[in-house]
Image 1 (tube, rainbow, N blue to C red):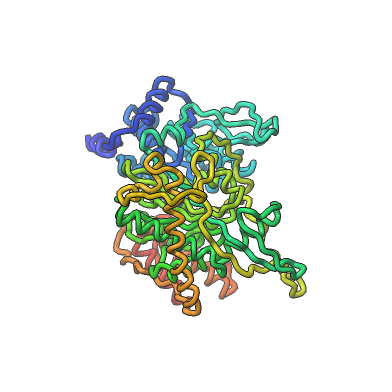
Image 2 (cartoon, rainbow, N blue to C red):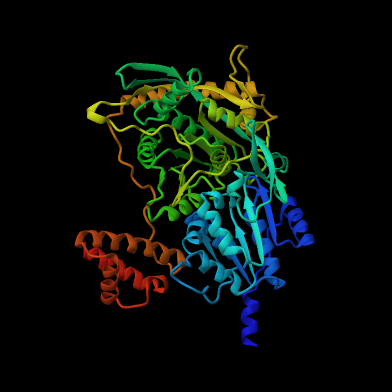
Length: 591
């Protein structure tokens, strides 16, 4: 009886939040067919996680499955899935490693990553077949990130009872690199025949989500400017972002604009900050926030300093190699900080509902990355909310923005390679090394000015006509299509852009005062006993062990053994928070 009572207490509950119409329709379609494989394509921000966990709860309660396994692209998404599942009464372990064999007692499954599955596919196969399991493959296009990943996923979950595949956009792949458990049809992409495009069992696109007020409407504000750089021959070249001519010149102008030493970046950051202020004070979003996407960690750190100088407030700097990265994302999502600067940590799947402004300061330009990144700022909480994306006025990005504006279905090719959390996303040409002391490229300067807004795939500048008079109450709705004409929206942004110039000019006159980035939000006291604390401590311990091993020229395994002798207890995978803290302090004394 006690066992039955405990099982009843752990029984999953369906979400108390009403399901959206598309989620109800997709669930109805699934339950009518009861398929082994089911692929859902739903625009970012539509609620794929809620749909998947609602389905999982139903299957668990009917005992059609006894375990739920979620495969996510990144470590942070493991935590996000575990928290969402916990809110619905499903206990999923986000910390189960490949070093631990069985699924821990007291849980109904676990969350892992594609990289972990590729590391030990047979281990995951054993877990998935030990009992009837539902495998949820989140952003399933990641199973196409190299043949090894796809083969590992197929080997691990080929015999699973049920498989649910999720993605934010249709994707295209080569005939010899099919993603497991996905149906394909022949397709012609950009005039090239012979490709395959995924076919979903249920599709919910951006157009439908916008009509249902599930996502925010997006205004794309393009900023041009003149870039000046010195090439390998020592010649000074100048070109406009929006009128660069050849592709090569356009790429170099874009690269120069993104250089932290120029004026384009601080100008656009000031425009972004102005937009956040407007949303907080007049737009009905008192917690509105913005995201800045950088190309690499060096640029991210420099952009954070510029944010501090321009706005007077330190941003949240989120880097993939920071052991506190997941905690910082969580803190930013629930806190009051205005801006977060990151590389790719919050480009896919991460839920930050209050983020409504995005500054595209990265050189990545694939359709998939663009859709996922824009998806971070379109999740709607109320019908009056809107999103704004600031981006360079270059053809590759304007083409992607126009496609989204026109409500087209995208067919996304998967990223080429994956190394950890870092995706190869077709960046601009890398910064060349300088042989024999001769610089191959040197950024000199770049200015910025508002170019246009995109509406229906057409650029509107607000120029060439009498000044548009907009009432103050209309300004509150800037960015919501239908309430302001494209020309009015462009006029407002152009006016605000001119007002920013004086502020940016003053900022550059004070440029010698190089502020250090200071945390506005100090670390909280780690008083909890949750798996979050344990996971963070394990990461810190591993990094410290690596440092001790390098300093003492001992193998890492030897350092781990010495550590367990000094601080007795179980292996780190199952050690308590107190033991992990004691081991961390012991390692610090060894440095």
